[in-house]
Amino acid sequence: MNHVKRNILLNPGPATTTDSVKWAQVVPDICPREAEFGNVMKFISKELTNIVTNKHQYSTILFGGSGTAAVESILSSVIDSGDTVLIIDNGAYGKRMCEIAKVYGLNSLEYQSPSDDGIDLDALETVIRESSQKVTHLAVVHHETTTGLLNDIETIGSICKRYNIEMIVDAMSSFAAIPIDMDKMNIHFLAASSNKNIQGMAGVSFVIANNLSLESIKDIPPKNYYLNLYDQYQYFTKTSQLRFTPPVQTLYALQQAIIELNQEGIEERYKRYSESWNTLINGISKLGLRFMIPKKYHSRLITAIYEPDCSQYDFTEMHDYFYQQNFTIYPGKLNKFNTFRIANIGEICHKDIKEFLRLLENYLKNIGYLEES
Ligand SMILES: Cc1ncc(COP(=O)(O)O)c(C=O)c1O
Image (cartoon, rainbow, N blue to C red; front, side, top):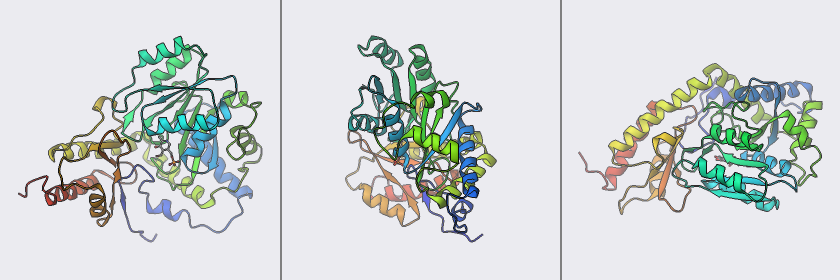
């Protein structure tokens, strides 16, 4: 296998991939309506379901599209005219769900929670209990990629169970690293994509859903065409094909990425990521930098780091300095806080983070934030 130049992506996905995943895209041309390709998608669909449940009552519905497609598919297909969805907003992706709900004119309530601290779950329950409109659905981001804040979806799921609420989880940046059990956590619909912790290529998004919940949306009048969840589910169940042209090569890469995920195991993958994270936070602390999210609520996957208090600091210059050395870093996403972000997901390990820290120390010396030794 030819070696492809290795870039260390410390942005929150698409993540660094293995050569074998990259090369899995180079396959003989195939019409995606062939049974042979249907088998590839059946494998992918089954294996993705297995990541979050061992029960047979769940299905994975694939879409060609980025992660937002899966989130939009759920919200637009599941919330009927008489329903009310409560959306938890404690970061940019929670806010995005609120925006999607507005675009579709859904009956939605927003629950604002601080972006740098855990959700007050008692207060959330009070809002649900005292709401004048019966809350039928709750939507939450598992891991706010904006900051690294991990929301306690298990407890939120138990609250939903008490009030007979269907739970929708955007698990884009937690899926395939942080263990999720949809049945135990009472998750009815979950959205994720191919290019973060699965370590595949960008271009496939998917919804994993409880089959009974899927059947219950059958008669909801469609609000869009391409993203209609029930139609996509039915068509794939009957034909093992997507309704519209799938990203063929991306799916071959995803198949390979899943094989490699199964070889490594989710727990081992999270252990590897966590080792990188420990290296990162110890290293930045030594350099006098602080990170935003308290350890108790931290995903250990993505870290929002406060920018150094130094007049010479400039994110773009720092980015370019790293980029020349094959490291890609990422800006913050919350206007209120001045941060930059480092993700430790993908096919990287603590040694790569050590090298990042060495370069960061050099940069901080160059701008006069740290003294030359
Ligand atoms: C939690 C979360 N939701 C949704 C998205 C949107 O995914 P995409 O940019 O692939 O549409 C992202 C992307 O980073 C994310 O982290």
